[in-house]
Figure 1: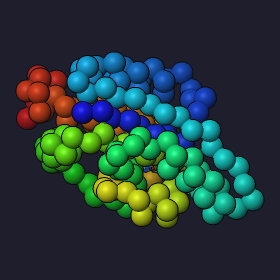
Figure 2 (figure 1 turned 90 degrees about the vertical axis):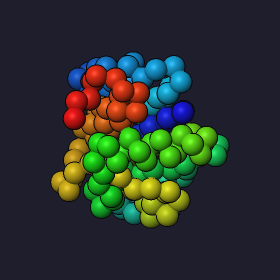
Figure 3 (figure 1 turned 30 degrees about the horizontal axis):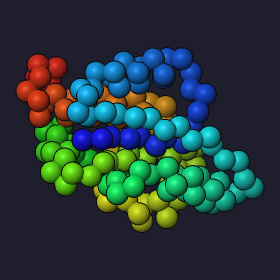
Figure 4 (figure 1 turned 180 degrees about the vertical axis):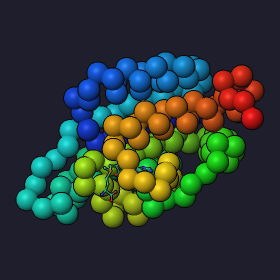
Length: 153
Ligand SMILES: C[S@@+](CC[C@H](N)C(=O)[O-])C[C@H]1O[C@@H](n2cnc3c(N)ncnc32)[C@H](O)[C@@H]1O
């Protein structure tokens, strides 16, 4: 299953790139996990910023991909439920694209295009940490499905 993370934010601090890369490199060849970083927009209003970023996000979604937004207002899943959800998406034989918004969050157009909205916590998290947490949780979900000892019940 092809996974892509579309993240608004570039020029991340070294510790973010290092932590993300640590999990990214663990994915097996049949679960390639790609990162597409988008340069944040600056506009006169938050609405304009989000609208411009939405254009770039929607253009970056791979063809036929299922779109999953990361959103503090989304659904929270247990590790097992996330693994089961990924298994269902795998059966759909479609790539999955996860989206993390920038400082202002995600535009309604991106939210409306999403097949699923995933919450990692009820707290508002900084996008840099969401990137790392998502990579770890997806790797953990893969380990559940693969029976790999990384995840212990
Ligand atoms: C700093 S937050 C933006 C907060 C923004 N005010 C909002 O209302 O979404 C940047 C991005 O991180 C992600 N994010 C933040 N907290 C999250 C959480 N608890 N669960 C999932 N994603 C989260 C979302 O994709 C969000 O667009």
